[in-house]
Image 1 (tube, helix red, strand yellow):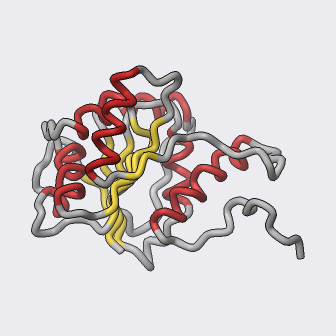
Image 2 (image 1 turned 30 degrees about the vertical axis):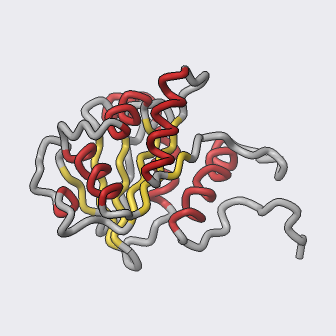
Image 3 (image 1 turned 120 degrees about the horizontal axis):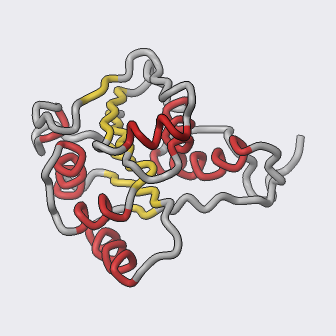
Amino acid sequence: MKILVAITGASGALYAQRLLDNLDSRAHEIHVVMSNYAPQVIAEELPGGLRLPAGVRTHNVKSMNAPFASGSNPPDAMVVIPCTMGTMGRIAHGYSEDVLLRAADVVLKERKKLILVPRETPFSLVHVKNMELLLLAGAVILPANPGFYANPKTIQDVVDTVVARVLDHLGVANQLAPRWNEEKE
């Protein structure tokens, strides 16, 4: 699969890191694009910076030369993790001022998988209406709402409950988090 991971300036950079940690760049073609503000949030939340696995290609958000900027070469799936409400609103309304937003537009119009992982709370009516538009257009809204039934012990365990669901929606097998009522071996 060709997978585009988009990282915006919402708090929750660890979600993006754990997703990248669990995507095999030997099995999938992985691209990363970051919004203008994402690097500042990453600097605050990931003291060692974002670790990109070998083989992952990065793209400048202002360059429209990325392969996924055209419907003739869309990714199979795009994950915006974490996704700001501003980014979500611009995607919902087809505002494509940079390659991140253009790629989301391409993914929707080509009927590929778009997964948006908002971390904002609470939601306003504007947020909910934007989510409604995106759901109607075929996007998956997967809020960063972790599960606690497996009694996570670390922040990474908590984050992994959300990342496991993202991987499930991508169709990527994973063992990141226990499944509900899973039989113990």
